[in-house]
Structures are given as C-alpha cells and as structure tokens.
Length: 89
Image (tube, rainbow, N blue to C red; front, side, top):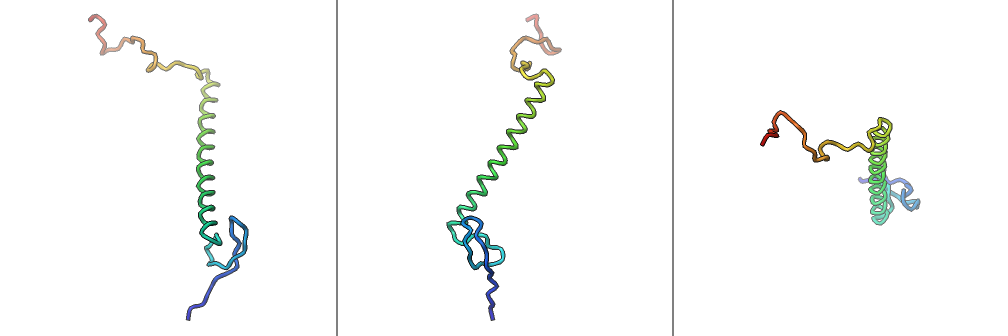
C-alpha cells in the first residue's frame, strides 16, 4: 500500500504553493529551468567578484610597495651578461 508523503511546499522561483515531495523546490519544469539559470548566474557572478577582488588586492599591494609600474626584465629585451653568454662573438 503506497502512501503519498507529499507536503505543501512553496516554489522558490514563483512563490506558488504546490504539493511536492520533501526535497522538491520548484512547482514546474519552467520554474526548475529558471531556478537553475539563476543559480548558475549567481555562481558565475560570485566567481568573477572573487577574481576581481583578488586582482585588485594584488595591484594595490604592488602599488604600496612601489612596484606597480615596474618593467620586468623578461620584457625589456636588453642584453644581459650571463655565465652562458659569449659577448665576444
């Protein structure tokens, strides 16, 4: 004998009341698709915000150290004497 254990739930997207199982969040497939889209958008937005904050903090720390506009040697393309370079050629 199967007993329906459905309970009165509220859809997290449209706030409508519906009878659903204990773990259901959405009243219809359309609301499920919209909920998934919103969840993905918020997750990507949060990831971008963390990345922007990280890049901002790094550039601020470099600026405080006086290294904000430093030219790095690997991009200077100047001749640098090393133990491997034979400049007499």
